[in-house]
Amino acid sequence: MAAAAVALTASATIASATNLPNTAVRTGVGAKCNARGKCDAGLVYEHNRCVKENVPAGDKCGGPVKCYHDASCVKGTCLKYVCAGTRCGKYTKNQCYGDASCVKRTCLTYVAAGPCYGEHTNNECHGDASCVMGTCLAYVTAGTRCGEHTENQCYGDASCVKGTCLKFVAAGKRCGVHTDNQCYGNASCVGGKCATFVGVGKKCGGNRNT
Image 1: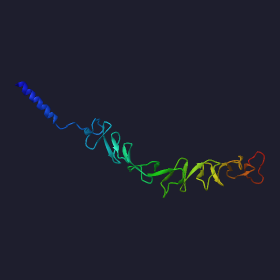
Image 2 (image 1 turned 90 degrees about the horizontal axis):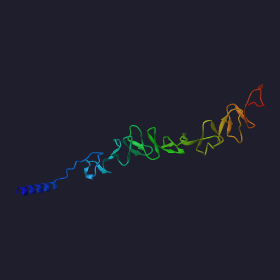
Image 3 (image 1 turned 120 degrees about the vertical axis):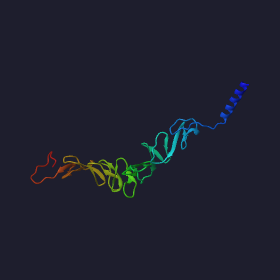
Image 4 (image 1 turned 30 degrees about the horizontal axis):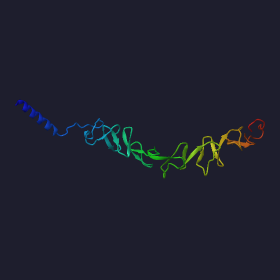
C-alpha cells in the first residue's frame, strides 16, 4: 500500500514538471547562449552570443554592440556615413563616405585635377596636387609642360616660361636650347651659358661668368 502511494506521488511530480512553463534564465549583451529565446529583451541571437543591434550614431559600440546599418563603429562610437559637403569631425556624429575625407570639419572628395576646395565645390586635391585659384594643379619638375591648357604647376625652384617649367640656375650654368634651365637674378643666357652683365671697366670673358 505504501509502495503504491510512493509510485503515485512520483508520477504526479513528473506530470506536473512536464507542464511547468519555461523558466530558463535569460542572458544580457555579450553573454554566450545556445538558443534565440535566452537573450534579454532588445537583444538578438548571433553566433551563439547575445548581441545588441541597430545602435544609433553617437552611441557607444564595439564587440557585441552593433551600429545601425548606415553607421560604423569608430574608436568605440557609432558614426554615420555622410557624403561630401557634409559636416564631420569633432562635435558631429558623422564620418565621411567612400573617397571623401574630413578636411576642416567638412567631408571633401579627393580629386587629381579640376575644381577644388572653395565655395562651390566639395573637392580636395589629391596626392602631389594643390589648389591654385580654385583648380587642382599637380606639381611637376623642370622640363614638364605647364600653364594654360595644362593642370600642372612648376615645383620648388622652377617657374613656368612659355609653357614649360624651367629651373633657375646661377651664372656659369648651362642654359637655353636643350636645357631646362633659366638664368637667375641679373644673369642672362649668352651662348648657352648664364652670364652676369657688368659695367664698363669690369673684367669679363675667359672662364668668368660675366
